[in-house]
Length: 266
Image 1 (tube, one colour):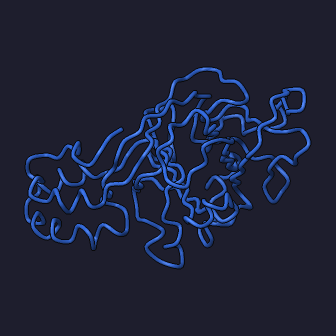
Image 2 (cartoon, helix red, strand yellow):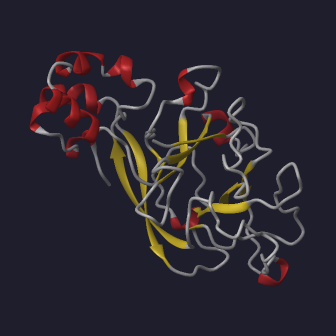
């Protein structure tokens, strides 16, 4: 299990270690392998676990949403406060929509995306949907970010506050002020605290700005899932990133109806 003393910092930022260490937060980093998965496994894209007795998620026009990610928490190391230790959490988005179901006016509006938690898992596959041919995308699959099905693996770590998190302007104010006139140090700072990659928990990465910096979204301070662009296999627009956020209270209560969905790109 990682601890604060294991934090690796470039020599130029050693003098700020105490500031950085105070921000450390548990994170589970996610790695991908292109392969077929079972209905129960953690994955990006592919076919979801879904009971035949439940209504499959659709957009406002009645078109089925497509599975973006499925996390089976029995496969995830116990490391993140308030996260489930069992059950399957799923993220669906609208692959027929050029903004993938995100509502710019209300990023918690799940009419174009859906977050679903299955607390109790049915092991009898005969009670599950097994044919997902009804979930279709445009022929060129222009919008959906994940090109093919990927299995997931998980690793625990600690992560410092990222530079694009809206809280960094205040918490890292002294660091930013002292390196502001040094282009090399500024670049090193952005690289060291970028927060890129796939993860559960930790701090987010944005290519534009943190949507929680304005409006009434400060309560959604827990990064539920981040999926980053990766080569030509995962691409959000022009090499962007997708994030899902939730409040601590809603996570504790397993209420995923008010999750904030954001994605942006360069």
